[in-house]
Amino acid sequence: MASEGADVDVDAGVDADVDKGVEKVEKKDAGGSADAVAAAKAAGPAGGESVRVDSWIWSVRLVKTRSMGATACRGGHVRVNGERVKPAYAVRVGDEVRLRHAGRERVVVVKRVIRKRVGPPVAAECFVDNSPPPPPREAIAPAGIRDRGAGRPTKRDRREMERLRGHAGTPAGPDGS
Image (tube, rainbow, N blue to C red; front, side, top):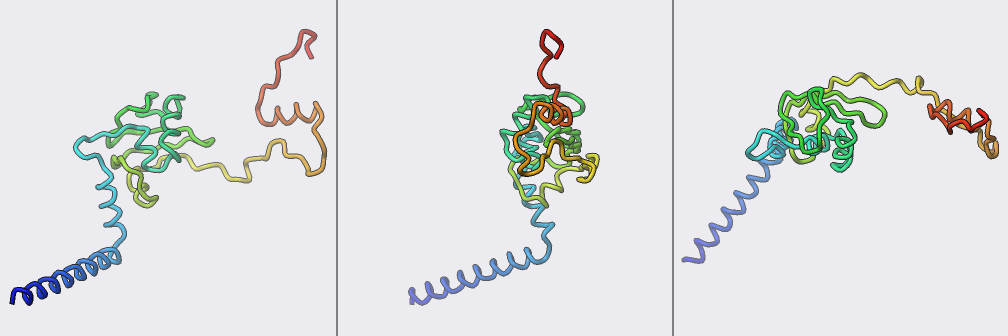
């Protein structure tokens, strides 16, 4: 008789596991935003209300790697509330973060502090993007593109390409050339 009771308990356990699986599927189908909010809460700091700025800009996908975020901070490309910050600066809700990266400036206001990297839809819910729109691709002229098979550029061509790209070039010699 003891073995019959054990069989019933095993069957009941399997039914409970199946019910939990169905509930998970129903929750997933019911709304992705609830799952996104849960994921963001799980990625948030455990006890504190702040996170390192290099970790946060990586977590919300403003930079590709955390080391790129730290390098940007050390290079002075990250400002929080108008001040240049080090990678370990603590970001809090309501802070304005300015990041110069990939040729444009991103201006975001922290809405939710997270520590772990999350998916793009969840990351978008963690900040308010006040960045100016990127320039249209037509406005960006290709600088110094040569025709295929045109050969090696002359010194004059090279100087013209550097001028178009915005490089100062080499300093002038003693004779002024």
